[in-house]
Image 1 (cartoon, rainbow, N blue to C red):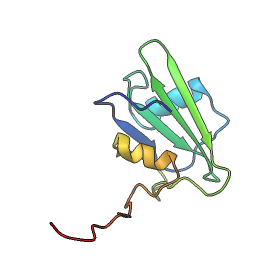
Image 2: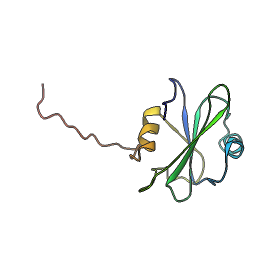
Image 3: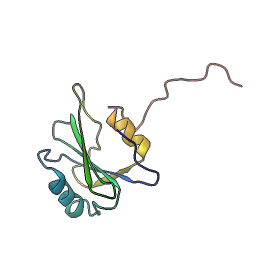
Length: 115
């Protein structure tokens, strides 16, 4: 996926979403449930009940874009809350889409020698 431009906010819809919804249904959720503007240029992320499917909705200046990813193994890490919205950085979104726990990523390369 092409990364979001600088200054773009990423919003996760906490709780499961009906993944049968497309552009219009997700845009309506952004307005009514999240209280945001789907045409703001920000990225809005939704996860299905089983946790292996995520959809991103964003306005690119010309139209709404819908990105979907399904993990063949594992689940996307999502907030435990059943409602509301959570803000992520673009880096956290990248980790989420790779199946990495974005809430507390572990440093894998410790320096061996100081200085």
